[in-house]
Image 1 (cartoon, rainbow, N blue to C red):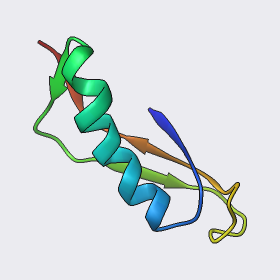
Image 2: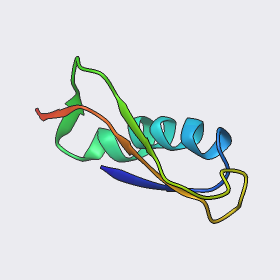
Image 3: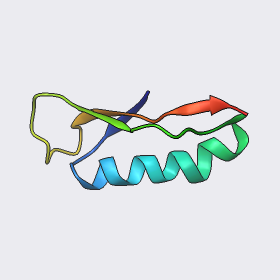
Length: 61
């Protein structure tokens, strides 16, 4: 689970891309063949401090 902060959809589109290109290569994990999950909370989705989550399927290499 990765926390995302920022307006939707920009923040939610940028976070998975950063996870795959920046975090995943040196993590010891790889992207798994399963669905991504996005979790949205109540609040102003256009606000700079809006909080959401993305859950990406990963497995140990």
